[in-house]
Image (cartoon, rainbow, N blue to C red; front, top):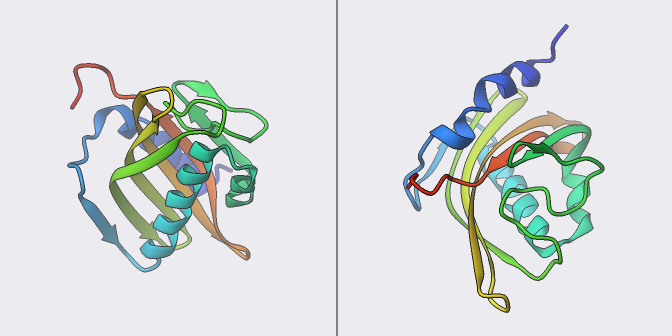
Length: 151
């Protein structure tokens, strides 16, 4: 039997590359969106810094995909556009969260930057979380970089 978050993941994978979110638009629907948004914000921030403590935010069986590649074994970088090394910073430009029961999905636009290298990369992610005994855990994260012709 498929877990509910697997079904939601299948339907939301296309959202990474096709759903535009207006900059600085934060939408929250349902109870618990603040906690879910905090987990996602922390996960992306720790990923940009190369901080391994981000591992505690993910379920043991979490599926993480960045730019169409499965990211195995945890550890940074998990998100598309983020480069390894732990010297970057991230800014979240838009976030939309929906909570239904013990599942939540978050759509987020972010920009990773490394001032020392004068680099900046944009990314978009769909993140599915599940409320567990230990709190919200990320069970699926799918991120990609927008194509050059996308806003």
